[in-house]
Length: 298
Length: 276
Image (cartoon, rainbow over all chains, first blue to last red; front, side):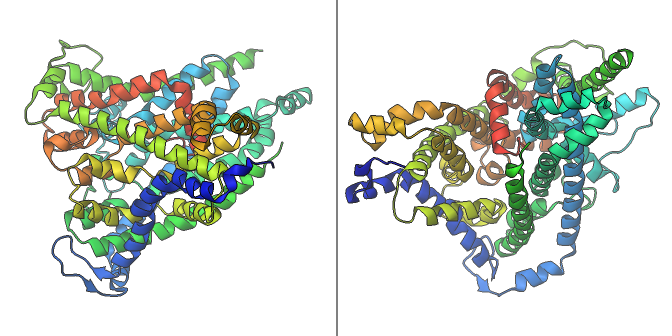
C-alpha cells in the first residue's frame, strides 16, 4: 500500500502523536489508571472520608465471600439477567420474524417498537412504577376487565424480579429486534424461492432455513443482553428501592449502597471487581462468538 | 390463499397488540399528567376528565424543584459532551486508522483490552478523583469522564478504514497537510458515522442516571433524570406532577428520535447492543 512518504519522517511522527494525545490523556486519566486503582483500593479498608486507610490484603474479598447480601444480590441479578436476556432474545426474534413476513406497515411498527428504547431510565421507571402499582396501576386495571383480581406485582417476593424483567422486556426489545432485522435482510431471497418451489410450508422454511442462518445473531444477542442486564441498576433504584426486603437488590445496587450510602470505598471496590470478573468472562465468551458470527457466509 | 389471509390477520393482530403495549403506558401516563390530581389515585379509565396543562406549568414554576434548571443542565451537558467527545474521538480515530507512530499497536491493544472491562470497576476511583479535584456539583465532573469513548473510537476508525487512500494521496499532492486532509477531505466522508455516534452519545448522556446521581447533589445542578428520580421519591403523593415532569424528559428524546430515526437505528445496529 502506497503511503504519502513525507508523513512518515521524524518531524511528522511527533506530529502524529498530536492526533491521539487528547484522547489518550482522557483515556489514561479516566479509564486505564482507575482500573489499576480499583484493584489497589480493594486491598484497603478505605472509608470515604478521613485519611485513615489500612492495607488489609484480601480481607475485603474474604468478607465478601461470607456476605449474605452480596450472594443474595448476585442471585437476584443473575436471575434477572437470565430471565430478561432470555425473554428479550426470544421475543425480539419472534417480533422481527413477524415483521419480516409482512411488508405492510413494517416501518411504522418498527418505529413504534423502538420508542421505549429511547426514553430515559428515569422516565421509564416512573411510567412502569405507576403501571404496575397495585391499586391504581394500568396493568391491574386491564387485567381487571377480564376478571383477574389485583396483583401486588412489586410487593411479592416471588413476583418482583419477574415483574422487573418483563418491564425491561417492554422497554428494551426494540434493540435486539433491529439486530435481527438486519440479519434477516442478509439472508438471500433465492433460498426462500427454492424452498417455495419445493413446496415447503412457512413453518418448515422458518425452522430449516431462517433459524439456522440466524443462529449466530441469536447467540450474539443472548450473550450481549446477559452482559447488559447483569449491570442492572435503575430498575431497583427507581422502581422498588431494592425491596420488598432485599428481594430486588442487584449487584450494582448493592455496590451503590456500599460505596455511596455507607461510604465504604474499599469494600465497594471489591464488589465492583468481583462483578467485573464475572462480566469479563462473559465478554471474552462473546468475543469468540462474535468472531464466528462475522465469519458466517451464505 | 385463505390460510395466507388468516396468517396475515394473526400477524397484524399480534403486531398491533405489541404496538399498543408500547404506547399505552405512555399515553395513560400523559393522561395522568393532564388530569386533576385526584384521578391519579383512581383506577385508570378511558374517559377524559378536565384535561389541562396545569401540572406542566406547576412543575416548571415550583421553586423547590427547579425543573427548568435541570432541563438546561441536561441539554448543556449532553450537547457539550457530544461536541467535545466527537472532536477528541475523531482525531484519535484518524490517527489510529491512518497515521504511524511508535507504540501504535500496543496502544490499540490496550484500548481493546479495557473495552472488555465493565464500567463499574472505574466508578469508585473516578468518583474519588472527581471529589479530590473539587469537581462534585460541577459540570466538568460529568464532562471529563465522558470524553474517552473507546467504543466511539473503534466505530469512527472503522469508517476511516473504509475510505480509499487515493483521496488522501490526491490531497497530499495538492499540498494539504494532515490536519487539512482530515478536516477537508476525510470528515465529509465519515459524516454518517459521526452523526450516528453523536446521536447515540447525546441520547446516552441525556438519559444517563448513575453517574449524574453520584456527582450532582445540589438541587440546581441536577440533570433531568436525577431530578425526576428525586421528584418521584419524595413527591409520591403528587403523581400527576411527577408524570408531567417525566414528559419534559420524554418529549425531547422522542423529537430527536422522530427526526433522526434512520440514523439512530443505523447507529444502534452498528453498536451491536441496540440500545439498552
